[in-house]
Amino acid sequence: MRLGINLGYWGAGMDGDNLAVAQEADRLGYDVCWAAEAYGSDAPTVLSWVAAKTERIDVGSAILQIPARQPAMTAMTAATLDSLSGGRFRLGLGVSGPQVSEGWYGVKFDKPLARTREYVEIVRKAMSRERLTHDGAHWTLPLPDGPGKALKLTVHPEREHIPLYIAAIGPKNLEQTGEIADGALLIFPSADHLEDTAIRHLRAGREKAGKTMEGFDVCPTVPLAVGDDVAALADLFRPYTALYVGGMGSRQQNFYNQLARRMGYE
Image (cartoon, rainbow, N blue to C red):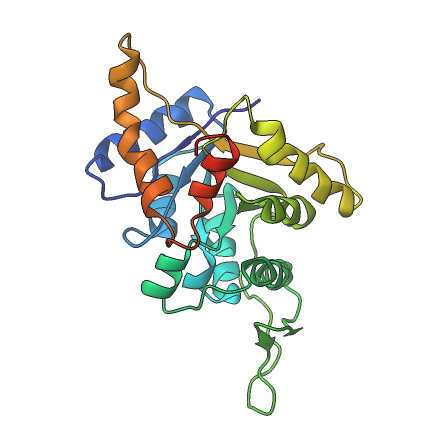
Protein backbone atom coordinates (compact mmCIF):
# COMPACT_ATOMS: atom_id res chain seq x y z
CA MET A 1 0.00 0.00 0.00
CA ARG A 2 1.16 3.52 -0.85
CA LEU A 3 -0.11 6.75 0.68
CA GLY A 4 -1.37 9.82 -1.14
CA ILE A 5 -3.18 13.02 -0.29
CA ASN A 6 -6.15 14.73 -1.91
CA LEU A 7 -6.25 18.53 -1.76
CA GLY A 8 -9.84 18.61 -3.00
CA TYR A 9 -10.98 21.93 -4.45
CA TRP A 10 -8.70 24.97 -4.44
CA GLY A 11 -10.22 28.20 -3.14
CA ALA A 12 -11.96 26.66 -0.12
CA GLY A 13 -10.05 28.85 2.32
CA MET A 14 -7.19 26.43 3.07
CA ASP A 15 -5.00 27.06 0.07
CA GLY A 16 -1.84 28.06 1.91
CA ASP A 17 -2.20 25.08 4.23
CA ASN A 18 -2.88 22.77 1.29
CA LEU A 19 0.36 23.73 -0.42
CA ALA A 20 2.23 23.21 2.85
CA VAL A 21 0.61 19.78 3.21
CA ALA A 22 1.65 18.85 -0.34
CA GLN A 23 5.22 19.94 0.36
CA GLU A 24 5.33 18.00 3.63
CA ALA A 25 3.90 14.91 1.91
CA ASP A 26 6.63 15.29 -0.71
CA ARG A 27 9.28 15.45 2.02
CA LEU A 28 7.85 12.38 3.76
CA GLY A 29 7.83 10.29 0.60
CA TYR A 30 4.09 10.17 -0.12
CA ASP A 31 3.27 8.69 -3.50
CA VAL A 32 0.82 11.16 -5.07
CA CYS A 33 -1.00 14.43 -4.53
CA TRP A 34 -4.46 14.71 -6.14
CA ALA A 35 -6.51 17.83 -6.88
CA ALA A 36 -10.17 18.11 -7.87
CA GLU A 37 -12.38 20.37 -9.96
CA ALA A 38 -16.15 20.93 -10.18
CA TYR A 39 -17.30 24.46 -11.01
CA GLY A 40 -14.67 26.53 -9.24
CA SER A 41 -10.93 25.96 -9.44
CA ASP A 42 -9.57 23.89 -12.30
CA ALA A 43 -7.27 20.97 -11.54
CA PRO A 44 -4.45 21.53 -14.09
CA THR A 45 -3.58 24.99 -12.76
CA VAL A 46 -3.44 23.73 -9.17
CA LEU A 47 -1.36 20.71 -10.16
CA SER A 48 1.08 22.89 -12.09
CA TRP A 49 1.55 25.04 -8.98
CA VAL A 50 2.04 22.02 -6.71
CA ALA A 51 4.44 20.34 -9.15
CA ALA A 52 6.54 23.50 -9.30
CA LYS A 53 6.76 23.62 -5.50
CA THR A 54 7.62 19.93 -4.96
CA GLU A 55 10.34 17.56 -6.11
CA ARG A 56 9.33 13.90 -6.02
CA ILE A 57 5.63 13.40 -5.35
CA ASP A 58 3.36 12.61 -8.30
CA VAL A 59 0.51 15.02 -9.08
CA GLY A 60 -2.82 13.71 -10.28
CA SER A 61 -6.19 15.00 -11.45
CA ALA A 62 -9.07 13.61 -9.44
CA ILE A 63 -10.66 14.45 -11.74
CA LEU A 64 -10.48 16.23 -15.07
CA GLN A 65 -14.13 16.44 -16.08
CA ILE A 66 -14.92 14.83 -19.41
CA PRO A 67 -17.67 17.33 -20.38
CA ALA A 68 -15.29 20.24 -19.75
CA ARG A 69 -12.73 19.42 -22.44
CA GLN A 70 -12.42 17.88 -25.85
CA PRO A 71 -10.36 14.68 -25.53
CA ALA A 72 -7.48 16.06 -27.61
CA MET A 73 -7.25 19.03 -25.22
CA THR A 74 -7.04 16.63 -22.29
CA ALA A 75 -4.20 14.79 -24.03
CA MET A 76 -2.39 18.11 -24.54
CA THR A 77 -2.82 19.01 -20.86
CA ALA A 78 -1.62 15.60 -19.70
CA ALA A 79 1.44 15.67 -21.94
CA THR A 80 2.32 19.22 -20.87
CA LEU A 81 1.95 18.50 -17.15
CA ASP A 82 3.97 15.30 -17.47
CA SER A 83 6.74 17.15 -19.27
CA LEU A 84 6.80 20.11 -16.86
CA SER A 85 6.75 17.88 -13.77
CA GLY A 86 9.50 15.57 -14.97
CA GLY A 87 7.21 12.57 -15.46
CA ARG A 88 5.09 12.95 -12.32
CA PHE A 89 1.57 13.42 -13.74
CA ARG A 90 -1.34 10.97 -13.41
CA LEU A 91 -4.46 11.55 -15.48
CA GLY A 92 -7.73 10.98 -13.64
CA LEU A 93 -10.96 11.34 -15.66
CA GLY A 94 -14.66 11.34 -14.82
CA VAL A 95 -18.01 12.25 -16.35
CA SER A 96 -18.99 14.50 -13.40
CA GLY A 97 -22.78 14.58 -12.92
CA PRO A 98 -25.88 15.80 -14.76
CA GLN A 99 -26.16 19.11 -12.89
CA VAL A 100 -22.57 20.16 -13.60
CA SER A 101 -22.39 18.69 -17.10
CA GLU A 102 -25.60 20.30 -18.32
CA GLY A 103 -25.81 23.33 -16.02
CA TRP A 104 -22.18 24.46 -16.12
CA TYR A 105 -20.78 23.08 -19.37
CA GLY A 106 -23.92 22.82 -21.48
CA VAL A 107 -23.09 19.23 -22.39
CA LYS A 108 -25.91 16.70 -22.43
CA PHE A 109 -25.41 14.04 -19.77
CA ASP A 110 -26.24 10.96 -21.80
CA LYS A 111 -24.58 7.59 -22.41
CA PRO A 112 -21.79 8.24 -19.85
CA LEU A 113 -20.24 4.78 -20.27
CA ALA A 114 -20.00 4.93 -24.06
CA ARG A 115 -18.79 8.53 -23.91
CA THR A 116 -16.07 7.63 -21.41
CA ARG A 117 -14.86 4.64 -23.43
CA GLU A 118 -14.62 6.72 -26.60
CA TYR A 119 -12.94 9.61 -24.76
CA VAL A 120 -10.30 7.29 -23.32
CA GLU A 121 -9.60 5.79 -26.74
CA ILE A 122 -8.97 9.25 -28.23
CA VAL A 123 -6.86 10.46 -25.28
CA ARG A 124 -4.67 7.35 -25.35
CA LYS A 125 -4.18 7.60 -29.11
CA ALA A 126 -3.29 11.30 -28.90
CA MET A 127 -0.88 10.80 -25.99
CA SER A 128 0.87 8.03 -27.94
CA ARG A 129 1.57 10.64 -30.64
CA GLU A 130 -0.21 8.72 -33.38
CA ARG A 131 -1.92 10.73 -36.08
CA LEU A 132 -5.32 11.35 -34.54
CA THR A 133 -8.23 9.76 -36.35
CA HIS A 134 -11.46 8.55 -34.79
CA ASP A 135 -14.87 7.61 -36.08
CA GLY A 136 -17.32 7.18 -33.21
CA ALA A 137 -20.78 8.03 -31.99
CA HIS A 138 -19.61 11.08 -30.02
CA TRP A 139 -16.46 12.28 -31.80
CA THR A 140 -15.24 12.20 -35.39
CA LEU A 141 -11.66 13.25 -36.09
CA PRO A 142 -10.91 14.86 -38.44
CA LEU A 143 -14.34 16.22 -39.32
CA PRO A 144 -15.35 14.93 -42.75
CA ASP A 145 -15.66 17.13 -45.84
CA GLY A 146 -13.65 19.97 -44.35
CA PRO A 147 -10.13 21.40 -44.20
CA GLY A 148 -9.09 19.42 -41.10
CA LYS A 149 -6.41 16.75 -41.33
CA ALA A 150 -5.12 14.07 -38.99
CA LEU A 151 -2.59 15.70 -36.66
CA LYS A 152 -0.32 14.33 -34.00
CA LEU A 153 0.70 15.75 -30.63
CA THR A 154 3.81 17.91 -30.90
CA VAL A 155 4.68 17.77 -27.18
CA HIS A 156 6.65 14.74 -26.01
CA PRO A 157 5.44 13.53 -22.60
CA GLU A 158 8.23 12.62 -20.22
CA ARG A 159 6.99 9.03 -20.12
CA GLU A 160 5.83 6.73 -22.86
CA HIS A 161 2.73 5.81 -20.86
CA ILE A 162 0.94 8.32 -18.60
CA PRO A 163 -1.17 6.42 -16.03
CA LEU A 164 -4.89 6.87 -16.69
CA TYR A 165 -7.48 6.58 -13.92
CA ILE A 166 -11.27 6.81 -13.98
CA ALA A 167 -13.52 7.94 -11.14
CA ALA A 168 -16.00 5.08 -10.87
CA ILE A 169 -18.96 4.44 -8.58
CA GLY A 170 -21.64 2.29 -10.23
CA PRO A 171 -21.15 -1.41 -11.06
CA LYS A 172 -21.09 -0.94 -14.85
CA ASN A 173 -18.70 2.01 -14.66
CA LEU A 174 -16.42 0.07 -12.30
CA GLU A 175 -16.34 -2.90 -14.65
CA GLN A 176 -15.52 -0.68 -17.64
CA THR A 177 -12.84 1.08 -15.58
CA GLY A 178 -11.19 -2.25 -14.83
CA GLU A 179 -11.26 -3.00 -18.53
CA ILE A 180 -9.90 0.23 -20.02
CA ALA A 181 -7.99 2.13 -17.30
CA ASP A 182 -4.80 1.78 -15.28
CA GLY A 183 -6.50 2.60 -12.00
CA ALA A 184 -9.76 3.53 -10.29
CA LEU A 185 -10.55 6.57 -8.14
CA LEU A 186 -13.06 5.58 -5.45
CA ILE A 187 -15.12 7.80 -3.15
CA PHE A 188 -16.75 6.86 0.17
CA PRO A 189 -14.98 3.48 0.44
CA SER A 190 -16.05 1.22 3.29
CA ALA A 191 -13.87 -1.67 4.42
CA ASP A 192 -17.01 -3.69 5.13
CA HIS A 193 -18.42 -3.16 1.64
CA LEU A 194 -15.38 -2.56 -0.60
CA GLU A 195 -15.25 -6.04 -2.12
CA ASP A 196 -18.95 -6.05 -3.00
CA THR A 197 -19.32 -2.41 -4.08
CA ALA A 198 -16.07 -2.02 -6.03
CA ILE A 199 -13.39 -4.71 -6.20
CA ARG A 200 -15.45 -7.52 -7.71
CA HIS A 201 -16.68 -5.22 -10.49
CA LEU A 202 -13.15 -3.98 -11.21
CA ARG A 203 -11.92 -7.57 -11.27
CA ALA A 204 -14.64 -8.52 -13.76
CA GLY A 205 -13.47 -5.73 -16.05
CA ARG A 206 -9.86 -6.81 -15.77
CA GLU A 207 -10.85 -10.38 -16.65
CA LYS A 208 -12.85 -9.11 -19.61
CA ALA A 209 -9.67 -7.42 -20.88
CA GLY A 210 -7.65 -10.59 -20.26
CA LYS A 211 -5.79 -9.04 -17.32
CA THR A 212 -5.49 -9.55 -13.56
CA MET A 213 -5.69 -6.99 -10.75
CA GLU A 214 -1.90 -7.03 -10.47
CA GLY A 215 -0.56 -3.59 -11.32
CA PHE A 216 -4.04 -2.03 -11.33
CA ASP A 217 -4.06 0.95 -8.96
CA VAL A 218 -7.10 1.23 -6.67
CA CYS A 219 -7.18 4.68 -5.05
CA PRO A 220 -9.85 5.13 -2.36
CA THR A 221 -10.24 8.64 -0.96
CA VAL A 222 -10.59 8.41 2.83
CA PRO A 223 -11.18 11.58 4.89
CA LEU A 224 -8.94 11.70 7.95
CA ALA A 225 -9.17 13.66 11.21
CA VAL A 226 -7.10 13.09 14.34
CA GLY A 227 -8.35 13.55 17.89
CA ASP A 228 -10.10 11.98 20.88
CA ASP A 229 -13.69 13.16 20.39
CA VAL A 230 -15.03 10.80 17.72
CA ALA A 231 -18.43 12.52 17.43
CA ALA A 232 -16.84 15.94 16.97
CA LEU A 233 -14.44 14.58 14.39
CA ALA A 234 -17.31 12.97 12.49
CA ASP A 235 -19.07 16.35 12.45
CA LEU A 236 -16.18 17.70 10.36
CA PHE A 237 -17.16 15.38 7.51
CA ARG A 238 -20.95 15.67 7.62
CA PRO A 239 -21.10 18.69 5.25
CA TYR A 240 -18.77 16.88 2.81
CA THR A 241 -20.94 13.76 2.89
CA ALA A 242 -24.18 15.73 2.63
CA LEU A 243 -22.90 17.68 -0.39
CA TYR A 244 -22.32 14.50 -2.37
CA VAL A 245 -25.03 12.16 -1.09
CA GLY A 246 -27.69 14.87 -1.01
CA GLY A 247 -26.60 17.57 -3.43
CA MET A 248 -24.60 16.09 -6.30
CA GLY A 249 -26.60 14.97 -9.27
CA SER A 250 -30.32 15.33 -9.84
CA ARG A 251 -33.34 13.82 -8.16
CA GLN A 252 -33.40 11.20 -10.89
CA GLN A 253 -29.66 10.43 -10.97
CA ASN A 254 -27.26 10.72 -8.04
CA PHE A 255 -24.46 8.13 -8.14
CA TYR A 256 -23.25 8.94 -4.61
CA ASN A 257 -26.73 8.50 -3.18
CA GLN A 258 -27.06 5.17 -4.97
CA LEU A 259 -23.71 4.03 -3.55
CA ALA A 260 -24.85 4.88 -0.02
CA ARG A 261 -28.00 2.85 -0.61
CA ARG A 262 -26.01 -0.13 -1.87
CA MET A 263 -24.10 -0.06 1.44
CA GLY A 264 -27.40 -0.19 3.34
CA TYR A 265 -27.89 3.50 4.19
CA GLU A 266 -31.47 3.81 2.95
